[in-house]
Amino acid sequence: MQIDGVFSGGGMKGYALVGAIKAAEDKGYIFKRVAGTSAGSIVASLVAAGLNSQEIYDILLNAPRNRFLDSSFRTLPLIKWFLLYWKMGIYKGNAFEKWFTQVLASRNIHTFKDIERDSLRIIASDVSNNRIIVLPDDLPKYGINPDEFSVAKAVRMSISIPYIFQPVKIKKNVFVDGGLLSNFPIWLFEKPDEKPIRPVLGVQLTPKEKLEHNRKISNAIELFSALFNSALNSHDLRHISRKVEKNIIFIKLKEGVSADFDMPKTECEEIFKIGESTAVSFFEKWSI
Image (cartoon, rainbow, N blue to C red; front, side):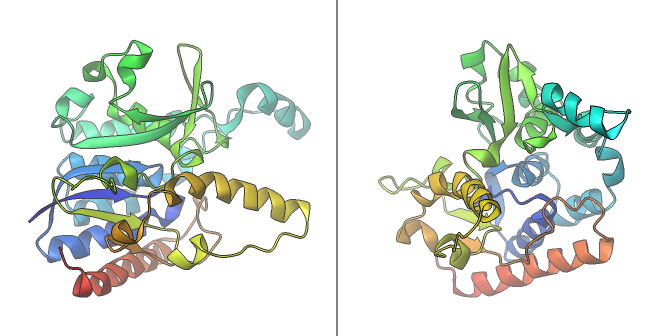
């Protein structure tokens, strides 16, 4: 059966998304359209490129993660912080984009014209104009032909965690991680007032209970964390109604692994299995 899929951001927790995809494949589901933010955009792009869960898992597990931290600065620590003011990111992000370009090229995917129309949507944040951008749909607003725009570049825009990776600049517009404005774009396919074209499956790496948690804030650090999490989740929470909620796999993972590029493969495998087992339990009760 054909379904549409939406994958949330979550950094290194993204291995759980792949585990959920494996469980979906084992149930006979085929993704027709996919969308994602940040880590979810990586996974969605690979699904749209025609890879199955095992192929995606192998690619991500063996990715040269240590090379992705291509520092912008080769100078004294104090000067690094000064340069960060201008570069707006510790790492360039070029190494990831080059690697992902090669991964997609191996499947003859270069620009959006190489992917079936409307089968892939990627979320980024246009902080110059304070708006969510859906790629490739919104590219014409910037005078860009989607058929000529690199899929790897779109993913690079979506994963640009503020201050960690340098933002992508296009025609004086600055783009950063899509999760800043929409970390889980279920709204792309699931509209409460419209019947979806086909069943929509969401995979959310933020557990449901965390979304509903009444956070205690007693100091500046906790306030900053709360502000960041509010930015990640507030927009999307408006679209997770009771009707939509039943189509979402909420995967509960421990805190603190999102940006751990040195995470050992054993932990990646554990996260994958948590995603798979959570999805297996979900599918036992999911009715379409």
